[in-house]
Structure formats: C-alpha cells, structure tokens
Image 1 (cartoon, rainbow, N blue to C red):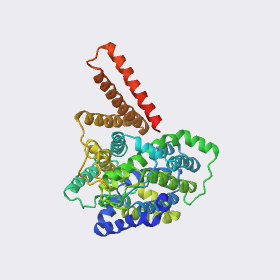
Image 2 (image 1 turned 30 degrees about the vertical axis):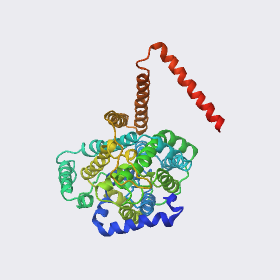
Image 3 (image 1 turned 90 degrees about the vertical axis):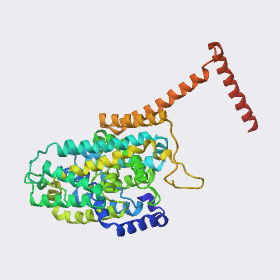
Length: 470
C-alpha cells in the first residue's frame, strides 16, 4: 500500500482503470465478491469486540480505509482480514486492548523489517514452488475443517434456532451448485442478504454484545509487560502465518488467479509486507484489530465474483460508514453481525477453502517456476511450460503433500514449511548421490578413488588458470 504510494502516478493508473472498467462491466459480481471473506471476518471480529480486546469503531474505520487504499493501489480483490493466531489467543485469554495492540505491533514491526531489508523477497525466491503450493492447499483445507468443526458441527437439522440449522446450510450448499451453471450469480450477496434478514428477524437474546466497553477510538499505550506477554503467547505464533500465508502465498495466488495481463501486475512480497506493516503500525495504536492480507480471503472473494479492487473499495466504504455509526451503536452492530447464521457463513468459508485448495492442481502443469517466457517478453503467454519427467512430477507432488499433511497435523504453517523444505532438499541430495553412483559404476573400486583425485586435480588446475587470466 505505502510502497505503491512512493511513485503513485504510473503505479496507480493501471489498477484504477481496471477497477473502473470491471465495475462497469460486472457490478453485481464485484459486489458479491466483496462479501466472500465475511465468513472469516465476522466471527473473529465480533468475538474480539465482545471480549473488549479491540474497539469496533477503530477496527471498522482503519480496516475500511485499508480496504479502500489496497483496492486503489493494487487493483485486485486483496482482503484485509484478522490475524487469526493473535485473534484465537486474544479471545481465549481475554486480552486487553493494550495486549492485543502489542501483539499486532510486534508482528507488524518484524514483517516491516523483513520487507524493507529484502529478506522476505529473498525467502520468496528460494522457497520451492511445491512448498508454496502446499501452504496454499493446507490453508484452504484448514478453512474447510474450521468451518466444519466450529460452525456446522454444533448445528442439528432443526436447531439450535429455526434461523440457524443444517437445513439452511443444505439450502446454501444447493444454491452454491447453481453457480457452476450460472457463474454470474451473485451468490455471496444473496446468502449474506438472507443471513442479515434472519439475524434481524430472529435476534439472539443470549449474546454478550451489551457488555461492550470500547465504543470510541482509544489511544493505546502498551507497557513492557504487555509486549512481553503478547510476544510470547501470540506474536510468535502469528509471525510465520503472516509471512507464509499473508505475504508469500498471497502474492503467488494473485499471480495464479489474476495473471497479468489482462489483470494488473500482482503485488510483490515486498509490497504486501510493507502494506501489512503499515496497516498495523497505524491502526493498532488506536485499538484496531490486528489485520493482514491472506490467500484464503483472496480465494473467497475471487470465487464469488471479485476480479478487481473495486470490490474491496466497496467493502471498505461500507465498513467505514459502519465505523462512524458504531460510535453510538456498537452493541447494535455487534448484535446483528454476530447473529448472522453460522450455517450460511460456514458454507461461504468452505467454498473459499476449496477455491484456495484448487491451486495445488497446477503444481506440475503451469506453476510459476514452469512457465517459459519468450525472449523480450515480460509476461507469460499462457502456453509454453517446462516439460517434467515422471520422477520429477512425483517428487513435486510429494513435497506439496508432505507440506499439507504436516501443516494440518500440527496446525502450524511454519512446521509445514520447514518439513516441505526438508523433503524438497532430501530429494535433491538423493538425486546427487544417485548420479554420483552412476558415474562410478563400472569402475574397479581401486580406480574410483583415483578418479575422484583426478577430478579434484582438474578442478584445481582450472581454478589456477582462471586466477592467472584474472
């Protein structure tokens, strides 16, 4: 976001034209797509407000502004969503405003340092694509599992409410099937509208929205103990999730789903890292929810129709307006949003998760590291790709699956990432050993050591000749 603002005219002209033309040609689809990430946003945001870990007006105003600026800067439906690991800890431990802000500030500061020093760009270059794909597939399946266990499993066919049960989930799933035959159907818009109506008609009298204390824009001053507690309990768990899923995987997914041309150039990992840092280094001081970008939100918004930044500009505008209203009506807004049926939100989240997991399909076909560019071309023509042998295909597929399996088993992106790297380099080392054995095959054992010494002498002579020429 701020990275793009450093040289705004050339960087913003293309995305802005794309936003305008896309909104004119498919307004309902953009409107529907803007709601594709609400299944993740609403439950976490409302829970954080009820535990008084964030300020609702600050969160809506600052994340709304971030949505608008992100849509203008990048021209794609890049989400602004909660930092999930921090949110989970904050809800469980009932973090104060200061502790929650400290957690977001620590992550933002580290991500900012990694971005401006180029470390995150280096990490993106050296990370094998099958590992990145594994992170994306794992994140998608995690969304599906989370929706199933936390949103749909507690429901019965007729309960707990007439407005929120498995019958509504089944109806939403059946309607989702129709989107394959009618891809322009504004599915998320229809489902969210139904959910909003049900929330108003069947209010939940057991909610805790009446105990909200933070209904303004506070200025937060975390203490040293706040930073220590937040870092050890929340920030360290969030950092790898942000770097891997919100920056590296999100940049890769933007390139896969929205290739340039015809879409604007996908944001680089450095741009995304600086954007995440800026959002939190500003908003967290005022009690806003720690937020980041994310591949899951991008997949959800894409799945339900968003193809430009106009979708999240619309969403950001609505959030900003609600933020102004929240100064005097925080409890009402939280009551309505938290009462939207989980049966409907769960289907939205599952659809987003499946859309994200689908990107693993291209690991051996048109993944970024397999694309062949013609001389002088800056963009891929969508046709030429590197041919892989059967053994290499199996290795790439296995690296991706191992990354997914360990990510899901330990519920930790960092564990999946490290395991995927180990598996990838394990294949590389095994191949080198096998090639070395093949070269030695057919020689008597007393000649193999001599051959190795001859090769070493040859390398030394070549190095001496090179030094002489230099």
